[in-house]
Length: 280
Image (cartoon, rainbow, N blue to C red; front, side, top):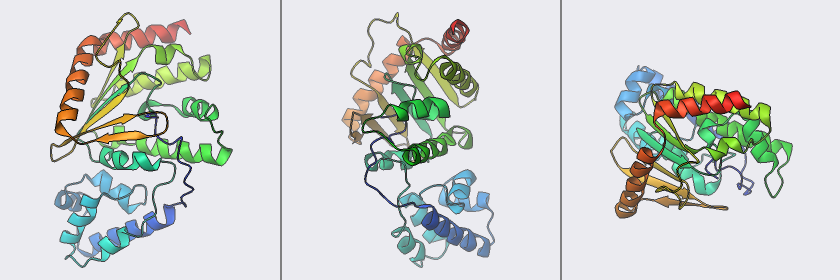
C-alpha cells in the first residue's frame, strides 16, 4: 500500500535504532574531527544539512551515495563502508518498499497519484491507525505503533526538504469514504489543507465528475533524483514494482501529466476540500 508500504512487513527484522545511532555517531565524530559543520559536510556529499542531521541522529538509513561520498571526504579509509554493511534495516517498512523509500529521502521531485486512500505522506495518525486496524492478517498494538512511527518519520520529508517539489493527485472518493469516522475525516481534511499551504507542496483532487482519466490503471509514484534520473513505483496488494526503464517511465510521466490537467486546479481542489469539510 502506497499509504506507507508498511502493512506487509512480516519478515520479523530486528529493531535498527541502535545500529543506526551508532553509525550516525561515527559520522558525526568524523565530521566534527574534520572541522566541518553539517551544512559544509552536506555540500561536500551533496545532501542537505537536514539529511546529514537525520543520519547522524540515527533517524534514517544512509543511502549508498551518502556512504561513498562520505568516504571520499574522510580519506577513503573504508570504515564507513564496512560499518554500513552491518546496519540493520529500518523497522516498519516493507522490504519491497525500502529501495523507493531511500530514493524519497533525496528526491528533488516527487509525484504521487493515489486512488485507494489518502497516501502515507499526507495521513494523520488517527487515519493511519484506522487503516492498520482493518488490515488482514491482523496487527497487534506493537506492530501498529511501529508502522505509524515509520510513517511519521517519512512525513518529515515534506518540511525537511523545502526544495523538493511534491505533487499529489488524490481521488475525491478517498475522503468521501470517511475512513475512521467523521471526526477522523475532519482532522484528515484539516491536515491535508495545512500541508497544501506549504510552498513546495501541490495537492490536486480528481473529482467524481471526471468520468474517465489517464490514471484508471492504478496508483503510481514518480520521482527525480538530484542527478536528474527518474524512477517510478507501482504498488499492488502484496508487493510493489520498482521501475527504472526509461521507456516505461516515459509512459507513466505522460499519464501523470495528463492527469494533472484532468484534475481540479490547486485552488479548486482546496475549495472542494473545504466544502467537504463543511459538510461533515
